[in-house]
Amino acid sequence: MRENQLKHIFYWLIIVVVFLFAIFLLPDFSILGYPFKKPDLLSDVQSDIVKPIRSDSMKSRKNTIEKIVVARVKGLMTIEEFGKDNLRFFFEAIRHAKENPVRVAFFGDSFIEGDILCGPFRDTLQQVFGGSGVGYMPITSEVTKFRTTIQHDFSGWKTYSMVGQKSIYAPLGLPGYCFKPMDGNEVVYKPSKKKFRTAKFFYESEYPFTMISTLSDSTNLRLDFSVSRGLNEFVFPHPDISALKISFPLHDSLRLYGAAFEDSVGISVDNFGMRSNPGMGLLLVDQVRLSQFNALRDYKLVILQFGLNVLSERDTTGYLWYLDKMTVLIRKLKESFTDCGFLLISVGDRSSNQQGKFATMPDIFVMRALQRKIAQKSGIAFWDMFEAMGGENSMVRYSEAQPPLAAKDYTHLTFRGGRKIAKKLAEALLKEKAKYERKK
Image 1: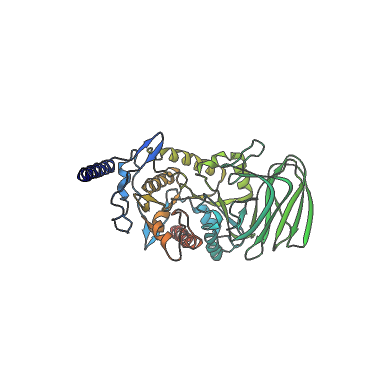
Image 2: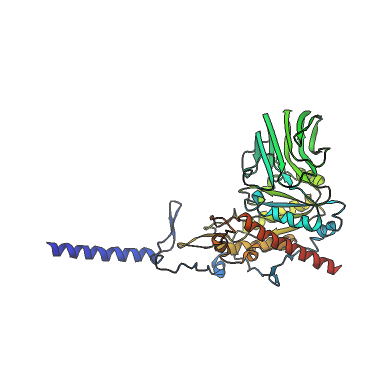
């Protein structure tokens, strides 16, 4: 009896082994929409070194975009200019930065939130060309607790956004927000370093309203405002502000679109980061309001950083729909932001679990090439952040560095990593400026 049982066990073992190898040979599949990946029977004996994903994996995809042409100058990732001196507006404005403000609008997703990338980029340009302050600030924010460039507290506000709640009574402004005060509202801003040279807020209202403000913890103002059916700004009359608190006891139809803290000269960089924004969400902002905002800010450079929220492990389209949407968006922004240069930044590296090991997502290569194509079609400048980070599997190296340059989500930078990439971006922009000057 015991001998027969051993034979049965042996037969079952053979069946199990054959079954495992059979499913190992199957491709990835899905049932009722749920994806299943084949098991990797050798994962426990493979080397711990991350195997690089072949960069030509994009060739097997339909509608493949041509490979990126890597532009380097002595190890520096350079900016590729696909416009006819598209960046000249920014470079010419910088010449007069000692007499006038030169403003940059930096649009992006969660990759730039918290001023992780924009903060050191802003600091570098302000050290070279002058200026101070953090530029645009929303009324409410999801990143208040970890943004270090400014202290920000708020209560009693209703927030509408392109990725959240919307209302016909709350038309969106930049970067896709509208803020409506409720009873007991207030918002407080304090600089982390130098005092605010100037402070202002952006608003519109169909009815008169009242504002109460406290500046530098001592100066109290109560001001009554008249109707403003178009976007308007109020500039506080006091310079060198060490703190600002504002509230609105009378606010029937008031809509706020943010505040700004900057100098009257030098560089100002507005961080228009919005979590989960794929980029084309900006198409929800009315063209008239875009133009009104630019009339108040007069941007000389628009930087676009998007793409992370579009990447997918299961896309079969080559993201050509994204090319169409982003090309339309850039055309719309060009119509609203006149006399302004445009720079599109590619996605950085992003890693995901590739058969048991973290490595570059294969579609990163497709997205980078497509974003370069967007810049070409739109006649604007392009900077390859993926290559600037170090190329394939650089996110793994950033996340595992000591101290870390990226978070353990293998997607977002730490503040240290943000400083590293911001320096490279600023250097590339200054290199392009020097090239422009030599041509003149």
